[in-house]
Length: 109
Image 1 (tube, rainbow, N blue to C red):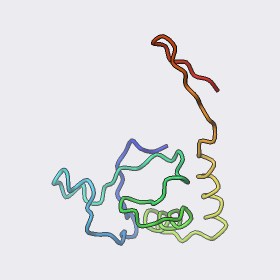
Image 2: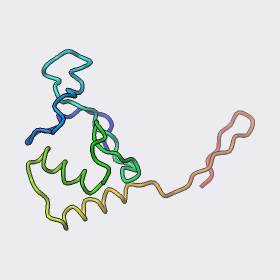
Image 3: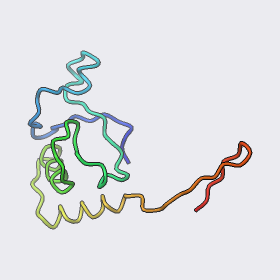
């Protein structure tokens, strides 16, 4: 679900923001240019803005841009709609409450 790896932003088509070089700013290694941590997808529909620089506020636009920059494809509107619906399905709609009793934590669902 993401959050555990770094990936080059702009694998196929360069990302417009060429100033932020990502992980290379930390490591000083040119091999790390444009490497950014891949965020988890859980609740992605609720976590705008998107990308490392917050350049996109729409999940649909983020899907289109990712397809272009990472895969080199321009998605048809129905594909954008399907992918966006899938990503929205990863939102946590379930409420979980915790109660603490005598140094013991229990979960109520």
